[in-house]
Image (cartoon, rainbow, N blue to C red; front, side):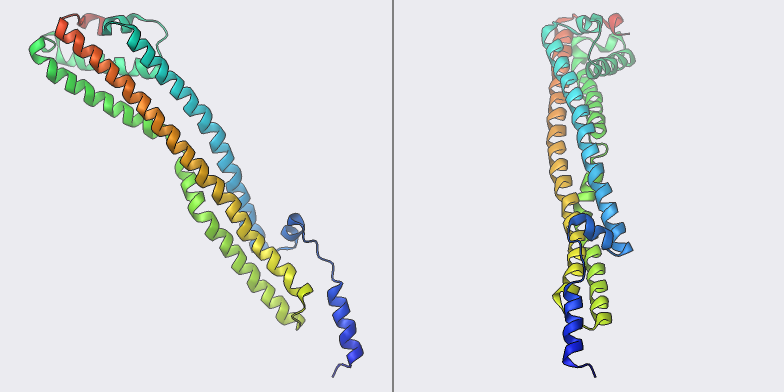
Length: 247
């Protein structure tokens, strides 16, 4: 049986155990599983910021191109004039190609005033598919953000549970509940949850931001396609549509 002097000495030794409670120190002292969890979460956080920078640049370029297309359509009186313009914005060029293909399939006899309604509806269908495809491409990569935002807190919680289990094992082995023994292990475990939140919160915010930007881009694409449809409809009604210029 230990005498009071040896108990006091053991307690003093426990109290003076060195522990680096900085985030880096806790990471280095953590269990291998907890380290793996935190490294994965840090990697997920870096991926979030890479996606943010890449998608903001991409959506900015797409939005400018769509707005330029709207301005070009508003400045021209007819489809033929649009086709003749050099250096068209990519979305506008793609939509004009769809219109030309539909007009070519319809033929000159299908572009008269009596058949104009059917041609306009078919063109609208083609342009709607083009808009949807552009919207899907604009959202490429953002699904990963939703995955990170929804799973990172639970991954961090797993690391915390694992770390606390190890802390309890350490308490059992040391046969003491001294705070100097308990606190470092629990702090290391809780660091995993904090890392999970650091990864998840920006991912959710960035996902929502990019979703709003994509919605705005799709609205601009809709404005562009509707402007083209109105121009096509006027050309059909007035007989100004030059089928040859679209081929």
